[in-house]
Amino acid sequence: MPLSLRSHCLQRLISFRRLHTSSALRSEAGISNPADYCKDLVRKHDYEGYLTSQLYPKRFQGGYLALRALYIELATVREAVSQTTLGQARLMFWRNAMKDIYNDKPPRHPIALAMYEATRGNHLSLYHFNRIIEARLSNSKEQELHNQTHLTLESMTSHAESTSSTFLYLLLEMLELPSSTLAHAASHLGVAQSLTTLIRALPFHASKGVMVIPAEITAKHNVNQQEIFSKGKSSHGLEDAVFELATVANDHLLTARDMFKESGGRVPPDAMPVFSAAISVVSVLSTLESVNFNVFNPSLQIRDWRLAWQVWRSYYKRTF
Image (cartoon, rainbow, N blue to C red; front, side):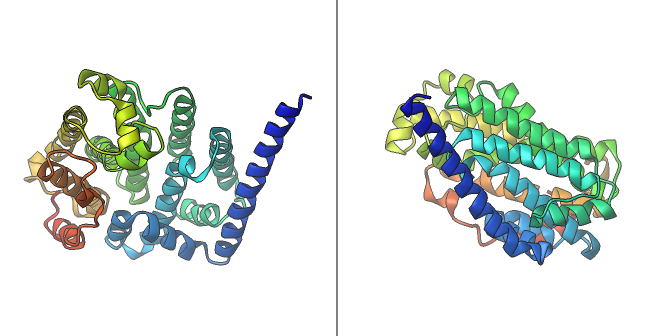
């Protein structure tokens, strides 16, 4: 074996061992209390998701936090590893882990153990979990070839439906709410949620040399990606591209609302915890508009102190 190839393989092996060791240490610390591990993970990485956890009936809160923790784990794989192949290996671990969970053989990982408890008490479809994981795997491979998460808006929307929307389907299943109306609304809300999350995270991804807005939109508005990556600031073209993507997100939000027209816009009380996720979407879109769609404006990264109150008000009014 050539020396350069041998050195490359050794470096990859060392990186994998470091990742495995650090992950194992964190996991061992949470195995004694998986529920607390998931709760802390959600509180640290998804403040909006943690806020809405309080709206779920007590008997569902553990399941919600386990699901949310798994979703965070899957969504942050790319940022947690130094190489794409390691990220793909981690995603494949979770694909196998979910299969083992459904076979009553959960791996010794706090999220896996919490998920085992969640699936035992609820009728959650393994198909939905696999759909989320496969979408993450597919997106990871796509980013190996391009410095753009998606080339088309259609691809981005499809990915959002396979991840964010599918996560909402799982929550509806957990709450035992089989309804085509709720599922249709959740589908559109999931897309709106995914797009606004990516827009808000654009500065972070740009710092890593990745453009989250689809290529067909950036090309239409003549966005100079290398300039965005190197200077880390907005431009007229980028603001126009962000406006277009935010408009798509808002359209999906409006479609989700329209599903409840017959009840005056009021969501069934049992389903309101799921649709409370829309409040953070509304907050981000409102802030974007106030800063003329400049995603590098610091206000987009500051936690909205009114959000907790807005979530509770929305919950009691049963609207979003």
